[in-house]
Every structure is written in structure tokens, then in C-alpha cells.
Image 1 (cartoon, rainbow, N blue to C red):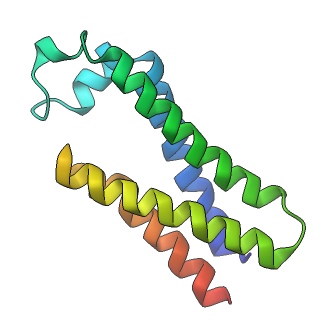
Image 2 (image 1 turned 135 degrees about the vertical axis):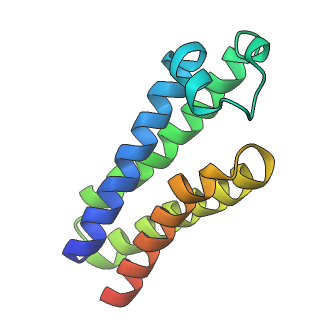
Length: 122
């Protein structure tokens, strides 16, 4: 895994750890600010459990990318990173379609940049 890929994947990890925190622990405060306009104010309290579940899934994506850093075999490390970056990109596309177009820029583009950095290194 090249330096550029490490940096970009680290950014994707940081984004997803932030999403985990927001969706699991700050849904009614920060989540309300982030998704203003995409979700009516009165829906944040009743959707708190759903958001926490989404946050947990985002945590799994971050964990998979962290795992890719811990794998000593460079080929397997890249393959695991490709897989989880692909999952992030697909989740971002779906989120952009179903929740907020902003997700395309926050989640999908960084994941695609990571995939490109890994691919160019190969």
C-alpha cells in the first residue's frame, strides 16, 4: 500500500469514525445540524435508534479499513482495503440517492480516491 493510499484511507477512516460518533451518540444535536433540510426536526428523536444502527455499520466499515493496515501481506492488505473502500463507495452512492446528495462528496468521493490510489500503486 503506497503512502498516498495510506493517507486517503486514513481520511476515510476518520470520516467514518466521525459518522459513528454522530449517528450513535450525537444524533439529536450534531445529526440535526448535518442533516438539516434532509430530515424534519421532529424526526430526530424517534429515529435515534435507527441512526445508532447506521452508525454501528459505519463503524464496521472503519474497522475493516483499520484491519487492512494491520495485515502484513501487502497483497491481502490491498485486497481488504479495496473491498471495504468499495463498500464505503456503494453505501455513499445509496446514501446520496436516499438521504442527502452531500453524502456523495463526504463518503463516496474519498472512497473512490482511495481505490484509485491503491489501483495506481498496483
